[in-house]
Image (tube, rainbow, N blue to C red; front, side):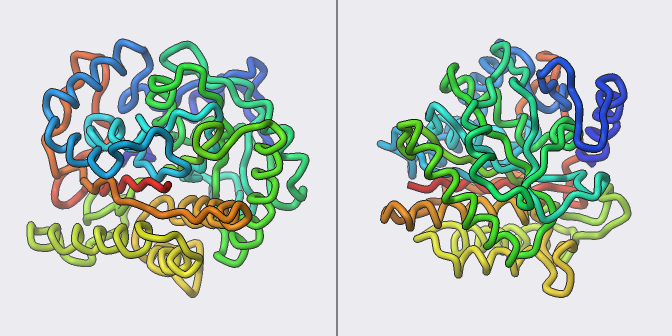
Length: 363
């Protein structure tokens, strides 16, 4: 299971770096936690993209078709699993995220370890290590935080250090815009009503910050929400079974159909609070928002990010419409070969253990 594999690595990083309750990193650089599933060097990124073009050319073309003619997206939802598994969905989507500043909404896979919930989690890092050297955390983050109520966020480098959902995107964002700057936000456990309250404040703060910086939405700044879709099966999920439709080929097809319905009816189309709420109700237990109903790890990042985007669009009188770029799974295609690149796989892929990937763009 990927998060257990990465957590073991992250613990070593934290011990070496010296973590504390709200996080301390003296170098100011956030180092990668996944050095297997993701690229660390520019030549690895180039090789992965070349192999995607070679091995998944038709899938890449099909996923790119809905985005033809789009120079810059305002919002995108991207997977964050191993490059070998996700493959073509990364370039199909992220080549259209070319803004100067990208606000990133990530998953708090290990937020429970730190007792974090009900607040956005920022970091104090100045830069994130990247294949091109490093990607800068925008100075606009400081401006943004001044606009947010204190009770709606925390600074916690320890969680940002061990969380892999945002670092997956950095190499591609940097590849398509070497000067990109980021504002990384982790979204831990929170109820939908809490997400509504925070997103309202965050939308105002983001809009004011970007307007004062002279950055237009799309070309100047954009938002990317990181999430893998369903985590499915009855093996290697830490003792949990996520096998609603069974683990044979028929069950797989039913699960994929259910996934595509989520993507096409709740995420694609004209963005609305009703559809965002429907997604939350589909993925989170009504009796306890800490618990899964349908296992998307971004069950908080997606609604919070989309609610924020919806409110900004409402303020600017520029509605957002979502388009499904594609859906895939870790067993839908043969993995892109990467072992000779010093990369690999961090989790199994089989009918009893697979992950879904949804790529959605908003313009």
